[in-house]
Each structure stands twice: as C-alpha cells, then as structure tokens.
Length: 425
Ligand code: GDP
Image (cartoon, rainbow, N blue to C red; front, side):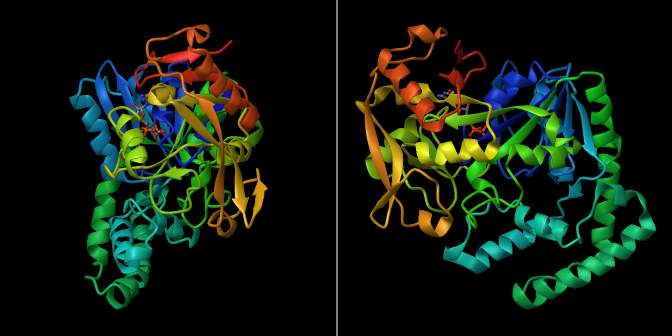
C-alpha cells in the first residue's frame, strides 16, 4: 500500500507530527521533493527535532528512510542531520539515497543568496537554501546526478562546462568571485565518498518492496499553495508539493498511491511573500502567533515570524482538491480555545463578485475575504482523546470546515505531542 502525506495549505500544517505517527505503521518512508528548505518539527522520546532533509521515519528501527530522486540533495547537510540524530541517542537509521537524485551544489546556495540580494525588496522570500537555482539547473540539464559522481572522467568534463556558464553570472551579474572548476570537482569527490554508503536504485527497490506488500509512505514538504503549477505562482517553491509528484519523485506507478492524507491547519499561517487573503495583523495576529504551534509560529528553518490568518476554506478546499485528498487531518485545533468567535473565510470578493473558487495569482491579489463567524468554545481541549468529549462549539467548527472542504476529517490533532490526536469514527 502506498500512502502520501501532504500539506493542503501553505506548509507548516504540522505534517511532521502526523508523518511521524503514520511512519510508525510504515515500512518505508520517502521524501520525494524539496530539499532542506523547510522543516518538520517532531517531538518524541528522544527529544525535539527539526528535520529538514531526512524523512520522518528515522526514529523507528523497523523503517527504511529514503531520499527519492525528486529531492534536492544537500549531501553535507544530510550527513549533519544523521550525525545529530546519533548524538542525541537515536539508533542509526537505515537510509537510502536514490542514485538519480541530484546534488545541491555550494554555488546553488550562493546564487540563491546573491539573487535575493539583487532583487532586494522584490524578493520571493527564499530560504536561501539554493532550491530555485538547483531545480533551474536540473531542468536546464546542467545539474549533477548522484550516479555521475562515480565516473571521474565524465564528472571532470561536466564540471568544467558548468563552471564556465556559472562564472558568467557570478562575474557579470553578481560581481562575485568566480568558481574554480578544480575546487568544484574536489568537492564533488568528497560528496561521493560521503554519500556512497547510502546510494541505491530506489525505484527498483520500491518495485520489489511493493511486490512484498510493504507499506510505503510518501512524505511531502510544504503545501498545495506552494506548488509551482497549482500554487500561488511565482510565490511558490521550485518542486511540486503535490501527492501526484510522489510517483515521479520516488519512482512508483501513480495508480499505486491509494490514500492521500492532507494535513490542514485549523487556522492559517504562511511564510514568505504573496497574497494571503485571510491574513490578520496587529495585536490579533501577534496573539495567535504567540499561542500557535508549539511555542509560537516561527519558521522551523529561518526562525522568521509566520504571517497569521483565519481558516481559509476557499484556499483549503482548493488545496485538498489539487492534492486529491482522500482524508484530512485537522491540526493545532487546541490553539483556538481562547477565541470568543472564530471567523472562517468562506468566499473571496473579487471586483465586487463573491467566488468560492480559488483564483490565479493576479486575481488573488484583488481578493477580499468573506467571513462567516462561529462561536468559540472558550476552553482547553488538550488532553481530550475521545471525539465525543470535545465541546459542542469545537465539533461545530470541525463540521463546518468539513462541509466547506468536502473531504472527511478523520483525525484531529489537539497538541504537539505524539499521542495528542483524536481519531474520529
Ligand atoms: P510541518 O512543516 O507541516 O511539519 O509543520 P511544523 O513543523 O511547522 O509544525 C508546526 C508546529 O506545530 C510544530 O512546532 C509542531 O510541534 C506543532 N504542532 C503540530 N501539531 C500540533 C497541534 O495539534 N497542536 C499544537 N499546539 N501544536 C502542534
């Protein structure tokens, strides 16, 4: 069985915790897109971890954790994460890295930083992890695939060719030091030695695993609205955040993905620039940010304060649709217990007309939220394990969201801890 777990909003929905939970019942967990640009926060018996590149299955000794071909593979970063786990007492996980994954080069990170500086106020809010330059190179066919590390002659020649191109940008656009091809080549040989123990023909491995009936979990990063095709382009990431891409980024047949679990947050938060229709500001936002998540809504990678807003049913229904969600997990519901009333954005007003369909970015920039208000439950719901014990107003909020998004909410998360989850019958 192949299951995908993905975000239906802007990312930071609390996927880490849910993935960790589902990973327990899985044999194989795979990252299929993105890189070290976003973080999953996981709290377990070993402590609190912000994983950026490793799949969330690394804490279980029965699982195999895989970096799929769709990932932007930062090799030193991966090794650093593995060592960090070991230093905190986590048993050495079984990790495989696709021989078709491409390598995040040090110059991708430099180019990302230089480009953000060049764009200054008009920047996209990149995490400067090199993601956009990395995927640009992949599709321009000048990226380095893991497999290429093992042919020295081929590698050396390619490094020369790529450096020639990069140096034009570095010298004439950014006015920065040029790359030395010998140094780049040397770095790649070091990367080869670091990654060698993990390299695997992942799609063949998964083919056999499926034949043996293994449970496979595809772990998405960020959320629907950050998808380069279906998201709020250009304020998106550079690899697809959709479950469908799991087939490509891991190397499995698309029809094998039977269950698509979309994680939805009970309110909205976003990082980076871009239209955010139900955004709130001032003291109202500060309070939600302070109470949100586990110790406040600040970026797991950058520490940046997240932008806050009310639940956006228009964006979430769309987010679930483009994911092809078969079920929804609603997270961080516990945070909302302080509110007298809870606004839900149920429509967008664009040029005087109200729509429930999520528009393209140019239209989105004109959208104003249409709210419906529900009464708050004014109580602490942490500690509740039985759905029936939730306050009626809280159940009404969940029902309203379910009605709006049109996908069954099967689980509700009411705290950051691993066991703080309510299964809905
Ligand atoms: P991800 O990238 O989707 O995994 O999201 P984050 O790592 O940003 O997770 C959001 C934060 O919320 C983390 O600090 C989690 O520990 C925390 N969190 C997850 N689920 C819940 C929940 O149900 N309630 C509360 N209060 N915090 C949660």
